[in-house]
Amino acid sequence: MRRLYIFISLLFICCHCFAQHSDNSGYMHQLEIYQDSLKDLGDKFINSEIDVERKNANYQFIKTLVIALKVPNSFLFGFDSLKTITILNSPDNRFRIISWHIINDDGSYRFYGAIQMNTGGPLQLYPLNDYSPLLTNPQDSIVDNRKWYGAQYYKIIRVDADRPYYTMLGWKGFTAKSTKKVIEILSFKNDKPVFGLPVFDNSRNHKRIIFEYTRQASMLLRYVSEEHLIVFDHLSPPDDKQKKDLESYGPDLSYDGYRLKNGRWEFVENLDMRNVPDDKDNDYVDPKKQAQMDQINNQ
Image 1 (cartoon, rainbow, N blue to C red):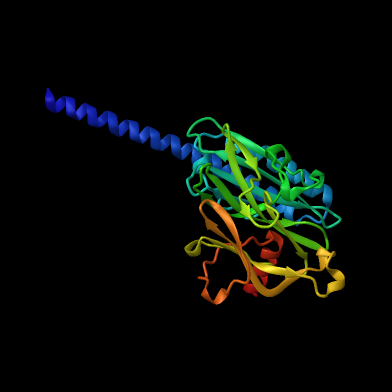
Image 2 (image 1 turned 45 degrees about the horizontal axis):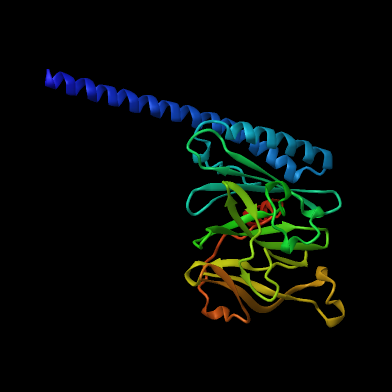
């Protein structure tokens, strides 16, 4: 009887594991189908030359993405085939942030995104509404997800302070003449996202750091984990007459940064990059430009 009991118990466990595996396989297959649809829509909102087609594809993309994220265990699905959006998990796996952009006919950009919490159960999703044009003082604004300073993020750093928060590096296409990058701060209050926090020790005590520079240039903004350091190009105008013209700014071959100290980011000037480890984070690349580069490299 004991052997029979053990046999039945093992059989039950095996059947339960098989059923669970089958359920997970079903979810994954369903998500793969959604991923294929999202991939096609993403290609359209990046590559279509017609403005209304880009926007319609983006609208369908948002609807399809929300449906996909409602599938059980969707947080575990990486959507790795989607190259037109960025999905980043927080270092503690508490949430992941999804972000992407649409380019307008005038060369400006609008950003879209969402924060998916790792609930292990029903979907908890915070849509991100790009409120950038209406923020009169974006460097000093503390906002929720409905008034987000839109960007496409490529790095998340968790900071263990009295109130833990996350530092995010992002790319922000701006106009036909200039580009922006941003150091954004994300925290949670009553389990809801808050963007912006006065954790930068500099002369102005900003809530987030925003860089603007000519679209013809590239700007380094990278996190060096070994040094607990965010390093970036120092931007300057080509001459003193253009000091107020941020569209003319570009890297001047010097570097500044923010070093993490006691839970805050302390500003440091004139970094010697020869002594900074080359921790190559995946800096954001415009998907359309990346596709062109891939095509060139394959020729």
